Length: 158
Image (cartoon, rainbow, N blue to C red):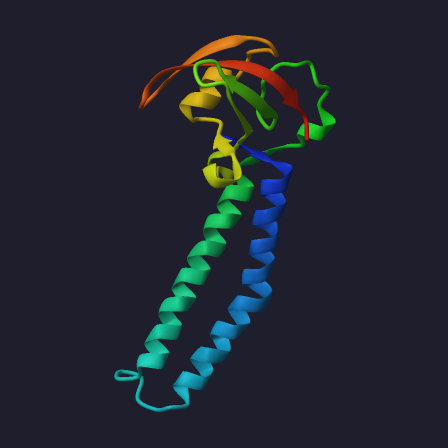
């Protein structure tokens, strides 16, 4: 079975969500179903059908998270010696050579990626162009807006 890379932080977030779904959300839904059943005829009971639908979404999410955690290869970047090379989990500071604009990205797994928080997927074009490169390297990355040249300013294991 294929293992998918995930940061320690991402793994802990999924575990917290799973715990919340199993210990808080699931019992709430069961209580909602029980309450809706007391209202009588189930065929025309909108509360009952809504609660059952919500239960289906909750159980689906639980299965999805368990599957992701089961196939995850959790990587704690803080335990890896910093060699100055870009690898999964590092935080990279880049300088756009054309605009002199600095950007910082953390390279994470697909499920953890969030561009608003500057976390990019290991499978994104930028991350694929960065992996294996070292500090002070200049690289060209093909983006939808065209070719962009970056210089790697720093690589941090945080």
